[in-house]
Length: 116
Length: 109
Image 1 (tube, each protein chain N blue to C red):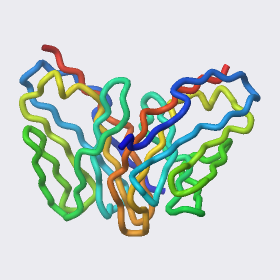
Image 2: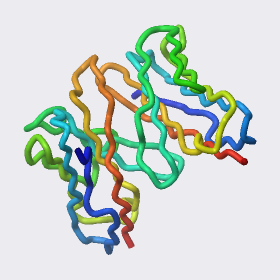
Image 3: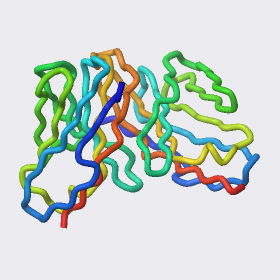
C-alpha cells in the first residue's frame, strides 16, 4: 500500500496563476484533509472532507477550493496564487472524523509550493 | 476559538539528556494526539491520550494528559540522535482540532 500520495512534490508559480494539488489514499479512509505548514506556525487546516461528497472549511480556507472527487481522491485548488500562499502543503486521511471521535491521521509526503 | 500553545519552540540537547515539550489549551479537550516530523519529512502519529490524568509510555517516550484535560506533555528520557525532529500536539475539542506550533528538537552527539 502506498498510503497517502501527493503530486506534485515541488511547484513554483507566478502570482495570479492557478494550480491544483492532487492527493490520493489507498487505505479506504472516509475522511481527508488539507493542511499548510509555515515556519513557526505548525499545521493549519485549510479544508477537510469528513466523508465522500462533503467538504468543510478549516482554519484558513480563504484563497482555496477543494473537491472530493471520490473516496480516494481529494484535490486542493488555488485559483489565483499569491505570495502569501507559499508554503508546504500536506494532505492527510483518517478512518473517520465525526463529532466526538478522532482517528489517527496519515500524512502524505507534502508539496512545496513557492509563489513568486 | 480554541488556542493551543506549545513550548518550547526549540530545544537543543546533548545526546543522553532528557527532553520535554508541553502543550497547553485554552479549552478543555476531548483528547490529544502527538506527532513527530523528521526534518524534510511528514508528520507521523505517535500516540493518542483520552482520559484525564492518563500516562502512556513508548520505550523512552512518556506522554501525559493533565487532570483538567487542558494540557499534555511529551518527555523523552536519554535522547538519541534518532529523536531529532519536530514534535507536534494535536488538540481536539469536540469537532474542532488545532495543532500546536511544534517543538523542534536537535541532539548533539
